[in-house]
Image (cartoon, rainbow, N blue to C red):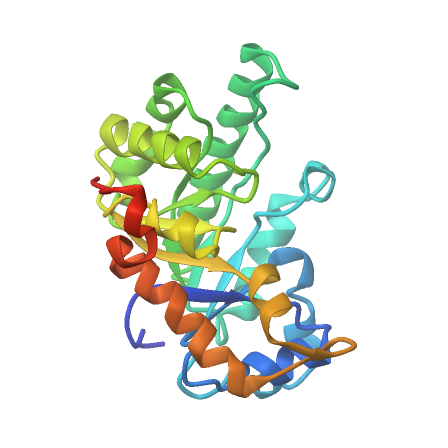
Length: 261
């Protein structure tokens, strides 16, 4: 399928099983991209996709999910799911694992990174073998330069134009930026897709190479109007504030000083 344009600025994470989220995001002019997890993707096979994705929206499939869900997942099943979902999915970031600075040893982190590299290669080569019309993008894991170096051959083969980076676990915007800059300088990445950070101040601290960012939790709190209900009218100004912080960090940071890549 022809891609309208690559992911840029805000991407809405959406739970397709939540009717209120579907009603909120589907077809909204301020939400050109939607992101769904592999674990929720069977909804697309059992329901009208038009109830989730509007005619001018694009859909991104990811497996940035809890480690327990990833642990026993069969990559062959995921590839088969992608073949089934090919008419509906525009972009994919697949092959996530888990790494922790305090909970895991360097050896354990290295093992998970190596598994991720293997999974990503499996998916990327599978997309090529079956001519899957979904744009496949790699991701990097970790925080140390030697972590990112383990992805070099993968990036050589599958591109550095838009590389996924899961920022869900970051509370410190300074540490988030430091680790992203480490990935950029180590792996010569041209563009980053940032998963899981949509706070305006965090967005203002993203490096210039960040192209798009995904999330929803903080946004939903701001536009909630009832028990589990949300205002579509409030969505645009709240998204615009985030896009402005993303594109013009000085306006958001003000007294905090300059931000450079």
